[in-house]
Image 1: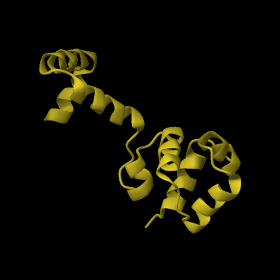
Image 2: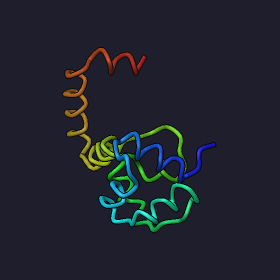
Image 3: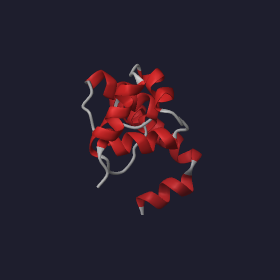
Image 4: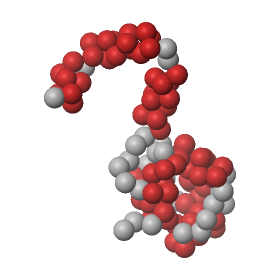
Length: 109
């Protein structure tokens, strides 16, 4: 089972951040702390978790719990959809179905 540190390392490398300091600089975490997170599963703050998820483009839940990787764009789209009035949701769904009718209809079947 993958630990949080292993998951952060895998995501860092998959996103093209070869060095821990490359990711750390973007997140606001020192290289030594990134090393401890990846190798010793050192805990980190909620703000660091949010920054990691933003830079690595995954949900905070994915970093903590693993499972199916859901990107932040999907989460943001869901939040926008939920905030819309019902009439606007229906319009949005018609537009989306018109853009990719085969893909959407297959998922409903």
